[in-house]
Image (cartoon, rainbow, N blue to C red; front, side, top):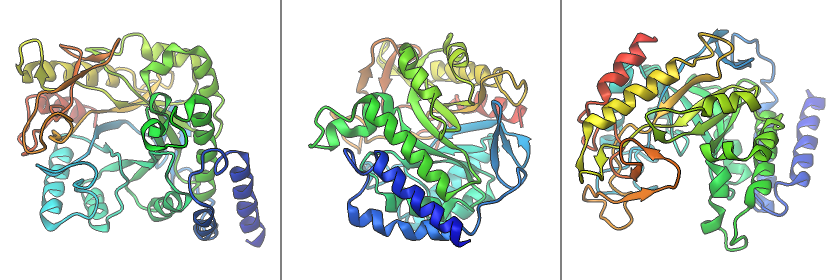
Length: 386
């Protein structure tokens, strides 16, 4: 046991000296020292059979030894009239928040959803109990910003690694284009970390996570734009410390040839981190539930037709529709008290039918939890593949 503890500590020193904590630190020196304690505790549980944990086999994700189909949805429940992240219900929830979250989980379970993808980790014990009650697993975000400390990362993993809701750890969200949000958040790096330093951050962070937990795979989330750069794809393929990848794709009613592109360059499993369509159509300047319903049916069907759980040669373990509920805070020119129509145009991508990201209209349910028509095909297709 003493030798194992010494190995973990020495390995941490190697990781820090190899990149993390030098030109783009995750934490201050004092934070790094304080993060050693969880490492010692983690040495108590490092050997598990494949039936006890979550593991990768080829392009399949195994849970309790069986291929897992990720039937997911993205979840960011901000209070009506509130802002992100201070009014995010999963952080320090009130009694009223917990009632809303329980109602959400009930509806998700009824729709066959088995996985939720959040943008902050769920650490509240009351919500964790609800996840277990409604048989929901989580893609746990452990490093969304390059400013995340080792202490925070360690405490999240130590807290959640033995919880039954934990499915995989996820590093970053579209970091290949936001560089862990360094362009706006870090005055020392006004141009951002860039791809290479962000890649090093992913590699070293994944290695560090594996020192803390042997039971769950480590993933990282990128955008579909990475498919346009073969050099970047080749470098992603060399990330030995990463077990699987998530990719966000917004391109009308289909993923096109993107899944084939990925499969031709990568051997590891893939999940769709985000996809879908919002419910506002700028072409007619009105709510368009019908188009969102069509897009949801098409995209979920395409995911289910490419499952590695059905055919090990397929690339996908499943995916997540974006998103569960509307978020009224997102339009920077509007008010969180009103449902605004502001949209963003991203060249070469976008949701059906207008290819405009109408940020406050993405919910499968609205902000008051009334189901939109898109809830119906989601439920139909997910329950069919239960």
